[in-house]
Amino acid sequence: MSKMTAPKSTTNLLKQLRSSMQNQNFVSEPIAAYIIPSADAHNGEYLADCDKYRAFISGFNGSAGTAIVTDKQACMWTDGRYWLQAREEMDDNWTLMKEGDPNTLKTDQWLIKTLPNGSKVGVDPTLFTHEKFSPLQQELETIGHKLIPVKQNLVELLWSDRPQRPLNPVKPLPVTFTGKTIKDKMLEVIAAMNEKKAKYFVVTALDQIAWVLNLRGSDIEYNPVFFSYLIIKSDATFTLFIDPRQASEEVKEHLKSEAGCVFTIEPYTRIEEALKEISTSLDQFVWFSEFSSYALTSIIPKKHLLLTSTTPIELMKAVKNPTEAQGMRNAHIKDAVALCCYFSWLEKNVASGNVTEVSGAAKLHELRKLQADFMGDSFETISSVGPHGAIIHYQPSKATDVPIRTDCLYLCDSGAQYRDGTTDVTRTWHFGTPTEYEKECYTRVLKGQLQLASRIFPTKLKGNHLDSFAREFLWDVGLDYGHGTGHGIGHYLNVHEGPMGISWRVLHQDPGLEANMFLSNEPGYYEDGKFGMRIEDIVQVVPANTPHNFNNRGFLTFDTITLVPKSINLINVKMLTDGEIEQLNKYHQLCRDVVGPLLEKAGEVEAKEWLWRQSTPISR
Ligand code: ZN
Ligand code: ZN
Image (cartoon, rainbow, N blue to C red; front, side, top):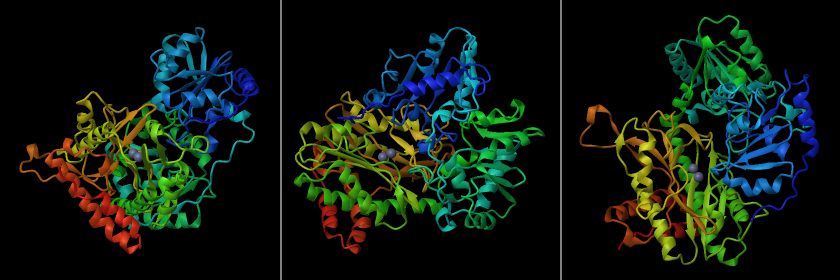
């Protein structure tokens, strides 16, 4: 099922865009192709409405896609999640390029094959990371094309009712939540800068700026960040580039009292000028992440440009300090209270046929709101029935909404932002009688999750090496799932956070696992058109108690901090070992011990009864 909307008429827009591509008021030389990515100037995962250029020019609203417009063609690359939606939302001017289909050329290959020799390809350099721009530039140059940074965004020119960039209030996050003052964080960053002989460190990722300055905002849905840039100088001063309307007295006071150093505030829009000024008198490096925009990195002369795939802030942020770690654990306990209330309510009401994917998700939101320091959801709730569960990024909408039923699986993946931590949890339920096959699949997913959760491994091991533990029991019978097993998660920040992860893909920037990193443990199994199941917990990396300690490396394991029972009616107990049964029963006892008293205190009698039923010890 999908949305039935009339496609956006783009004939006029494309005509105007093509004319701008030739107009030397906007481009230094006429361009044969213009690339419009789904990206903002900060390489963020979610975009503010004002940055949705690709959606505006094409009508296609999916979260991932790249458009290329030439004088005759308009093509949209997007992956399998969005093929149907893209077809419906785009008019006949557009050609859908099925990303992931082996017969589809990648964007760079397509440019090389399609354009006449010596063509110019244009792109807004604020929307292309250095890491993307440079290789494409080299590739195009090998056959005589040229990649041209076009300063004026050509889609912006046509977008008369483009929304304003959000200017939502920015709020200090007290040290009782952050555990570390700005000053202490800055000192660590500056030590890393001195090591690299960097005089300036330009921070462009919004979550990194929010973290190091102990500030939070709400400019981007689900991500508690605010539009800004930060330049840290090796003499322990810094400049924050932010809209003056967001730099309130409260923000300034907070920076003054926590940073204990000289700082200046300049307008958000002045970043390029400021870098140009810096670039005129350089004797040392200017440090950027290679995921910073080419518009900024290209201002600094190459010999003074230092690029790394991860930044010191990213590494510091990934290893939670004791206060952050405690907050993360607490956030997951509160979240468990809300989820137990939701799932028990669902179990009771689902038979009426009146609860739908959308109304269920809304109920869950209301229950989370009751928890202390709730600030919003951490991503759009995936509340999916039957075949919808197989669409990994399914988002229920009015057009696709269906009642939650008792004769098929229900998958709920959701999370919250609390001031003390970010959550992300998935449970899969069957409110009737599951088939033996569904039980077998669920049990295999569960076995993998239990196995990963209890692994012991040496410090600094890359998460990649752990991925197979979660898949083993699916692989045994020729099954698998098409996504990674674990991602990092922020502390009242982005729900997906690097640089580490647990995936079959090798993540080049993975620094290896350390104590107090937090990741998801989320194996699943999906059958297109039929059902989807996933079980997701957040785990904390903790020291393991081993009898030996090879080469003094220190050994680690995981502590699961999500405390919501798993579906015992979906388990085929015969497939579990004694050890797995013990591990699961222990987990369920912990859910009772920690969440039970809170449900009781809140007067949630039914939820508590539900928790007890769901956590009944299992045995063969
Ligand atoms: Zn999730
Ligand atoms: Zn997740």
